[in-house]
Image (cartoon, rainbow, N blue to C red; front, side, top):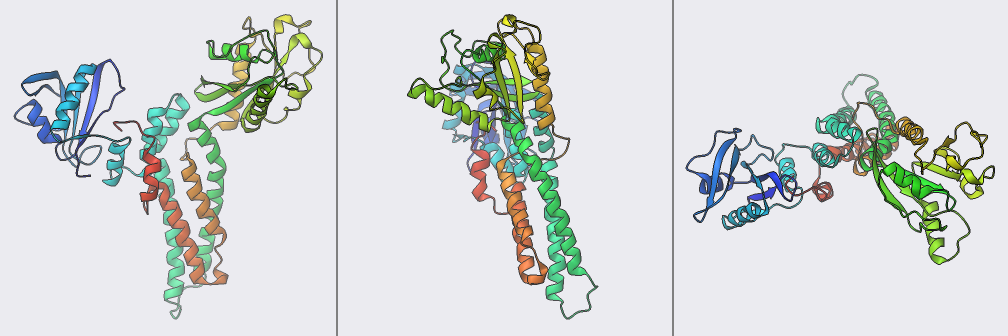
Length: 438
């Protein structure tokens, strides 16, 4: 925390403008040394010519954020310069010579957390917002950045502390004339909190899927047109298409923005009796992806109707959509006795708009989230699960001291969500996936 760090805070590479961030005790002196005799007014952009060893580095803008009114809580300088590699190299050399060091991934946000400017949930939300590719991901990250999850977790922790206080009163003042039912009040609060934790844990998988992407697997027999369908949905040539059966041997993924929902669409090997060891492995991976997928698209060949591939049919059930591909080769307009089946042609594009709408509706129905705080990471769910287990062991009839200890365990677990207690063991997990400059 005593070192002054710097990093490129905007996207790397050639660009019109690049933003550099400096944080630490040397930020102000270095700005003075490179750019002039006085610091700019706080939080106001001023034009500045940066000079090092008598040579101009660049002509740009500088902003000065004195501590503690800055993102990290330290003295912070932002430099808005031209986005050329030569400028970046010259500035980096000048800053290193001045005693600064390059920041590690997530170090700015980590310093903000350690200085009390962010809790862990807001820090994670920053990373999620930077990584957001769809509108739904952006909305969820902004809700968490606004402190929704922090307030939810702190509310749970406050409820536990109040219940613990009631039990402590019964323990410490057992000889006093306490009101009747004090321990029962604690039990009622614990029961209500356990119900709420179970509800949020049940919804947490949906929110985590929203953050990471909803997995949809395309499954079917060889030459059913799975790869052609993937290419059509992706809008580009992702998979190799060939008339030779068994061309696809491995799982091929493409990321889609489906009406604001992040979808990971996976093409898989054709389902049949394997012709060799490599194809057998491809089929094994296809079945494994089918098992793990949130949704499955079962693709059948219209040219083979009325026969439907039995291996593909066996994967039907909850969470599947049946797609009859090659509709341009079908012998009739209604070749299957399944009103839910979607007729498409990957070659001509017919029916793809209907498929996309159905797929979007299925995703929305299964993963729709409400404008409420959510457990968006496995770390959050692990802490809430630990608290719920402790509450399940809560039983004042076994002894008030044991019951109080279970409440302390639960409060300790909930506190780890926002970082209020013992966070050193989770800091590296939280910040290791950050980009440099955040």
